[in-house]
Amino acid sequence: MAGANRVPAERRRRRPTRGGVLLSADLIIDTAVRLSHEHGPEGLSVRRLGAALSCDPSAVYRYFHSTDDLHLAIADRLIGEAMRGFTPDDDWTAALRGMALRIRAVLLAHPRLAVLAASRVTRRENEFRAVETGIAILLRAGFGAAGAVRAYHLFIDTVLGHAALEAAALALPDARREADERAWTDAYQSCPDDTHPALAAVRHELHRMGGSAFEAALDVLLTGLRQVHASG
Image (cartoon, rainbow, N blue to C red; front, side):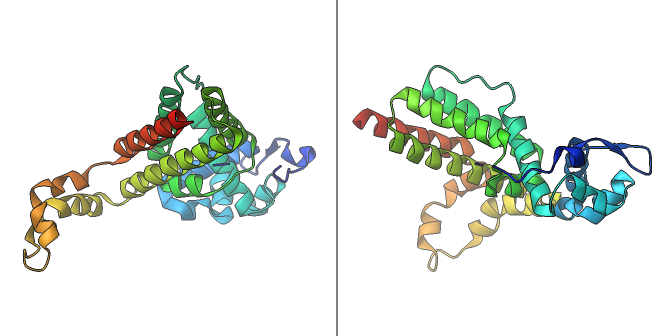
């Protein structure tokens, strides 16, 4: 998650729709987030937004230059949710852990938007604050400029990648997600020993593949960063 083209102020002012609703950038984003929960990524179309807001779809373009501009604003909104009220712990690894868990919680709360939020660089204020916070944690810990940037890159890509993967699974229909989870204690248990000897050797442990690896991956990452930090 990492200036944006700005819509002129006179085009950002609140305007009533034909249904009497006062249109604003925040209302459009709120509606887009709601529609994504109901309809998936296709809920972010300008046509569907116009219908939900009782306005001509072209009215959306008074607030956002394009659908991509809207997507970036939505991603930045989620970053803002994750960082709202966050006060870093004095211990830098605890601070990064706290930041990571907040990001994960927001992506899991918005599973159909998780890939959008994880894959884009919004170039907006919430992302600027988030990156500023992460880099500042590492600089205060004693990382040099290059080391802080490398460490933050590793941190944020690991967090976003694992959280988005977990959220994508959560967005699946229940039956598909449950079938995927059962695969480790069902389909994988029936692989023939002679053709899959490695799987046979660990068959009794494969159930572990069904859970989330997020916190374990975070532990590995933070342990590695502590070792890099200690080695100077």
